[in-house]
Length: 128
Length: 366
Image 1: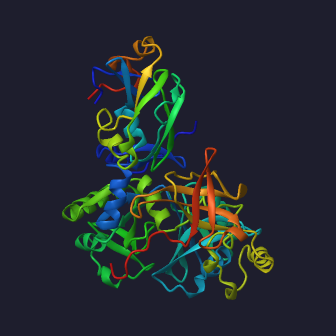
Image 2: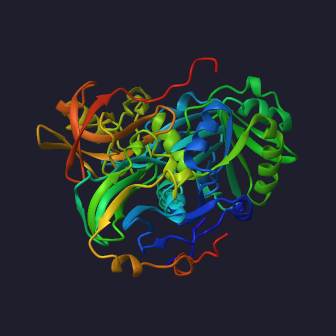
Image 3: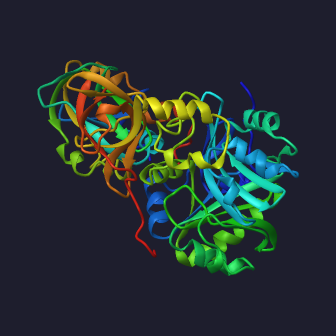
């Protein structure tokens, strides 16, 4: 439920390096806690995001939560399909539930994110 | 922090994979498979809820009926043994102390089912208001389960030794054998579906629960948490005490004027409510839909042309009506069905429109 090739933030976002860019979404832990995601507000391509600052909002049946950027940079791609199928954030958080792709200012911010093991410790789970 | 209380079904919930959360001083299941899943199960098949955190207050004695009549705005005078009704209970100033279900067990015995968060203060209030009768808090000895949905009657009939077809809406029956456990069964609920509420001895609730789960397996019965209970009741247009109604609101401001029976004689809050009726209410609780992709949460402002005209009290995505819905108090001028409003969603205006409650009504005969 927590892939080895991702880095994780304390705000429950995941980040994956792809050709020097960072794909971002929320973790299975966050998706489960939110449950039943119904709307997602994301920035437009070209917007700037700042590490550990809100870049969007996710609304579930139960609650509203801010989305926090795991790294600073410029948004180069946005998952517009989430407008019509927000529920994939619950069912496929690391795949079709991705949210934005960021052209990072400084890849060192990515390196400072948590490993899978560190994140599992942070959320008190054993990874199963 | 005060220790959270647990119902007798706590272990059953945890074993079934429920997520437990604090609610009104209790540790309760908020969801099992998921709110939307459970919500749809109740609309199409059946769902089972543990609502043992709710309170039960017995009012007994020669003055029981008169006392209940004084306590509530609705008319308990017409209740025959085995009948029940819904009513607010108001303070002298007309504010709603609680909303409850009242059952007439027999002439000298009434049972009031009250909200969890208000049980203790209700018992104090009721005890101080009754005359020639006494109020007893039975909450610790009685558990409460709700079986709701179009398949509820068929499921319960398999294990209940009584003919449920003759149990009409808001009727109740005592001493029913439900899977070997003596229970009070009423045809009531909080979901907008046909269904039953089952009062049984506290420690026997797991037995009743397991019997119902077994009896409902082939019908697609699922255990449900308080999350789905909230989305179901909001779609059905039912008030949530503590959110939509409380001591600062009256039945005339809430859409509960139908529960205020002016021709039944005096009752607590009557003079204040009569005065409010004569001058007209300044605000009304209305239902609204959001036309933009957002959810108006409790506390958000409702505006008209940039001016604040009200406040949201409940808001969610209605999983069955498939719309963003909510309720809130607005100035009377903004309360008409069809009135365009905006909801202030964290600084952004989302388009909203006042709609008639409820958002969902089940088809007749289903």
